[in-house]
Image (cartoon, rainbow over all chains, first blue to last red; front, side, top):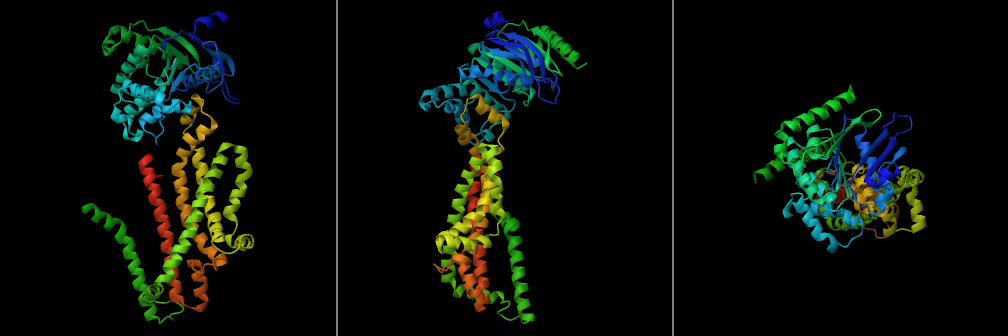
Length: 260
Length: 260
């Protein structure tokens, strides 16, 4: 165990999560994720994949085993400048603030002077494909896709080492989801953060990731660990290849086994 | 122009029609049944009394209005501060909330004499009565608003290591604004009632307020003037309610998704 923590950026060792009087949410979850890897976690609903992400973020503490981020517990890592960013399923923006002011929030909460982050906020809003004009709008004036872009910007603006994403594109239509998948890969290729991406969409998981973990429900545990060998940059052409379809088939097969 | 006309027909015409129907019925009732003018004066007599005493009623309107607005403003500030305190811990809430309910259940006429004993007669005591009875709706609505915060947003603040103070100022308080506005609307009407009741007990220093006029006019059987004063009180209540609603709607439309 001591050796693997040196090489793994995220190390999960027999992680369990349970609440009194309820069946275990997670039990015996083991995996290692090296720095800079893009990993997706798929599983049937209620399999504990979101809970696992919450444990990784430090919002929830494992009741058995442990998760180490860069060798430290998530809470400890967060307090010691390991920058992890969380992207929620909903855009989770403050409705009374403009996009710009929402994206600035992480700096504001760290009491940084505005002059220090103003340019970086502008660049990050641009990076996720929003215009200067959009930046001064409030969330309700934006479409669902634009709100999610703003939410991504707020996560990316901290220059994270780790991006934890909880089904961020689930409410979007398929075309928009594919577009955002391509864009998130473009940004990841540049910035090389470690990504843990929760989704129930197999095609999305295969398209994005170097590796897909399939979770088994009740209690949540890792049922399969599949490598996705396609080279980056990946473009939408990849979706039309036979190899892509075959991998989707493989992941779907593993996924089906978890509910049978 | 067309929309203005439609607005008039939809929202203004029906209540106006109801008003004139009642006034006409009232007029003929007093004529046909030959009701004595000190029991029920007809609408023309009331209008005449209104015009004759216009100066006195206007001064009363301003006096009672000032008392109600100061009482309302005080309950808005104090109520929001108390709610902020309540939002910080369930223990504080459980310890103090029963005493907040006391504000709602105590008959104001029962404690008004006490207020006169402690604070004397005059402006400050009338304001205090108005403040006491308009405080409760602010406390309950603001507390509810401060506690009903989107859990994802609370997680976002935790993930950014926000302090309790930052969470209150940048998340809870702005989230509670629509609820505070709802509380303020209720409180604004109650504050006027409080000012008039307060004047019954403590209004004979200025000898100006509408409550004082009611108290003074009734025993003289100047029923027409009494009616005119009651109508002036109602108009005062509506004016303050409308002002608070207008400001509330401006805030909601500018920063929130419209309606509270």
